[in-house]
Image (tube, rainbow, N blue to C red; front, side, top):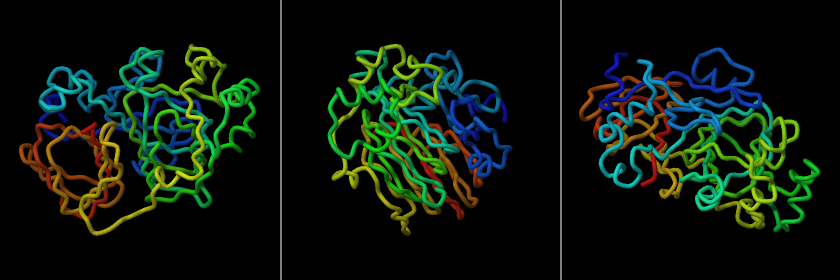
Length: 336
């Protein structure tokens, strides 16, 4: 791949981008990609223009030429993003995509809303997210939202005492399997269980309020990101969700359609399950190929072969694209 991959005129295949994290995992990512597993490589940040919280460049994706994708987009924004996206979001792709393989249960945590992030973290974006379950071990589950409403005092007490049984016990435990989709609005406390492998779409920040920090982070400051829990816990959704889980979790609806929308949250991000015969409108996007092989037939960049385990960043300037072959993939897109 030459330096031309930075111009934003053709799809670019990306290498893995796995910053070291505080929890174990990554075997499923290695199996999908055909690489060697890393004990603390549970996340692959795909086509990332976002850094880990408090880091200068950790988390940023590099193109095969060595150019950071963030720099390439800044240099050729209309080719990468398109004029409409530029008018709304500037040169920010407004999207973060990860492969996440939980080798152990993640801690109970949540993410701030746009309003809370702007007021307290100086960030344009909060962090609403959604998951496409790629694989799940037998009996695997996730925890989503409190089953019943909790008082601010109760939640603060659990956090102060680091009462893991109380926090987990108060959340809804939801079994998941491959093909399921899960929407996680900002503020919703959650924890991904061991053995769950997902494609994760997020608003482009690394802002997490970690209620259950002990045993995962070095200290409480990592849990509240410097705000103090008295303030940080103001972002937690303390409502009861037991009767509303069907608005968040949906089973596999795999059918014959070549393109199927996965989430009804176009103000945050979009995702499509893609297979042969798909006709894709021009857009900046991220393609994660889950199985099979095929060809992306682009309007302006020719044919691009694609195989299982490969990830691509797709520029707007490549134009309309059709998909041939037996592949199954997820295309992740910025807000509408």
